[in-house]
Length: 130
Image 1: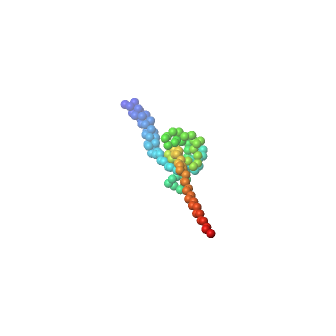
Image 2: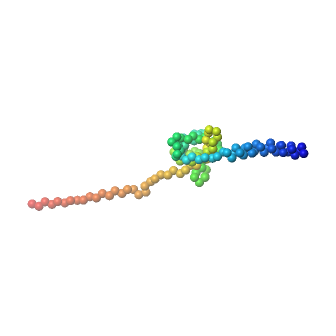
C-alpha cells in the first residue's frame, strides 16, 4: 500500500507542473497588426499601423520569422523601412514580441496607355480683289 501511495505522490509531483505550464501556454494568444515598417533595428520593429496614428514598437528575437504572403521565408536583409507588413505577436508582460512578420506585396499604379493630345488647326485664306 505504501508503494502505491508513494507512486501516486511521485506522479502528482511530476504532473502538476506540466498542467500549470499547459494552462500558461493556453493563455498566450497571437494577435496581428497590419501596417508599414517605419524603423527596423537589431531587436526592434516599429510599424505605423493602418488603424492607429502612433507607431507600434515590437521586440524581435532570434525566433522571429520573416515570410512573404505565400508563407515562403524572406531574408531579413531584404526587409526595410516603407514595406507593408502584418506582424503576428504575443504579449510578454508589457512587451509585444513579434513571432512572425509577413511582408506584403507593394502595389503601384501605372498608366499603360499614355494620354494622347489632339490638336486641330485651321487655315483661313483671304483674297483681295482690285
